[in-house]
Image (tube, rainbow, N blue to C red):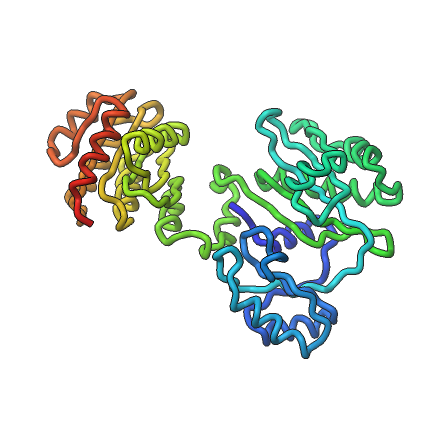
Length: 381
């Protein structure tokens, strides 16, 4: 789950990371009011969950009242990479002489978080890594020990950072680590972290991504989710703790486990069609959860067949079968539903489903995909 810049900066400020004075605005009138309170010049920033806002015209410097109405109107009536702008962050403009990148991200190959510091801030870190790798220093963080001050000093020294900035850099890095650790983040970054004429550091932009798997214990973030970037179906799936992503194909998928879902989608493509969604019901799914998942899949009008592929472990196949049996009588769409059950209580689940001839059973994943694709071609949309 990604946070908007203004949301990330609220957490930054809470931990003592310096951020510019700012306020949110939904209209030009509100933007003018915020600007008058914090004082010109201000920067108007589109709040959308997308990179490249500046190049897309989503960030504008405004020097006085005569400019703010037209500038805010222009941004609020625009789209950034297909996402409509609904709010602005009106922020006090900051004079600076240098830009850094500072961030923490999970590194899967190391199985540890990694602190990254770059002397080329204000540019996407991926671009810096590709074009100026010597401008980046990084160090793994031991999760049991946390981020140590000597680690930050080491990175700063190798990049030639002014010694005067080491202490505030340590403080900001420690605050980022605290947020990263306590909030179950998978990414947290400041880009740019700028140096002011007074030789202090200020976070001009912020990004945070929270691990969706931790939302059950980070419930405050559920209220912060931007529903504008999710379809209504994806919003409903979130309520049932289902991992759902809508795609462009026509074969609806219900699977338990992300790896199995990817394999299922590959088989659908190999059989000659495209998946309509990624839907992982997770481990230990109950009958109610299965029923909700099937209902969500069938709400997509593009779906012409459903492939249910369950490999029972923690999730019991008979429990999945009970959920399907409970849902079938109330379904309003008569579509082919292909079921492949394997693993824990698979035989019990198959016996339950034998009572429902409209459910087509298959023994292997590939045969299930082939049946789903074949049957889908006989459905008129």
